[in-house]
Length: 255
Ligand SMILES: Nc1ncnc2c1ncn2[C@@H]1O[C@H](COP(=O)(O)OP(=O)(O)OP(=O)(O)O)[C@@H](O)[C@H]1O
Ligand SMILES: [Mg+2]
Image (cartoon, rainbow, N blue to C red; front, side, top):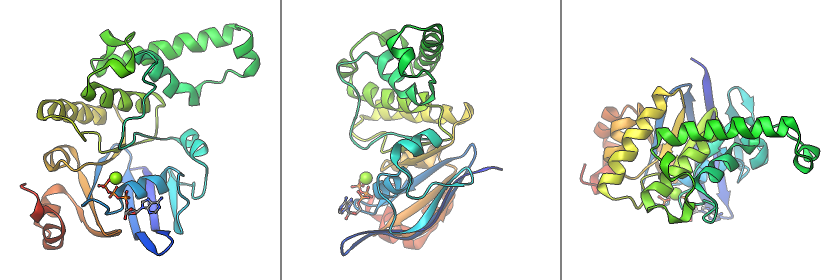
């Protein structure tokens, strides 16, 4: 099994605040792995360390065997990480389709001359992009809305479009930060089903989620953060039974 992500002894400090302390984590190819923990536990900070937004104070991040610690976010994207954010970040005034195509730009080879002069290579790439984008939009049932403005979609669909856009970059690892945040029960159900499908499509996913039913259902393994430290890991069943986790987190939730 290929190791897609290896987070090795990561510590992240902000002045006196230790947001992450000595965190280790691994994700294998084809897995869907969850990160849970109370507010302020350090989950988003972990994603920010992985995707190059922060350079960890200590420790290393490896993507598919390559040490990417301290790389810039765009370099890391090129290397094969794609993510969504806790708050929606779409181009609201662009169409659904163009949002997805924008997510694909990392892989196009056209250079500046191609974009000034309408070269055959450019045209061929655009067609390929469009076809790919349409294919994944169909999977998420967004195809019929492809010419609508992203900002006009219902909230749940906007969140799904973000995932589609991240998928469009064909990442080795897809990081989702609270994809179900703000969704109603039905939207959450639908999303859960679709994220489950990602696995069958061969995507490797690391996701942060507060909705316990969501993570318990689709994640093969979970990591539990509390106060910047890893306090538990294992299958959803193991985590549910871990007294430390129950004390810190699950006990406060009606699971
Ligand atoms: N850039 C920053 N500068 C200073 N402190 C930060 C920074 N980013 C995060 N923190 C702090 O680090 C801690 C962890 O925050 P983080 O956003 O990672 O938590 P989280 O687990 O994602 O929480 P939530 O569930 O609310 O999204 C918090 O105390 C937060 O205030
Ligand atoms: Mg967060």
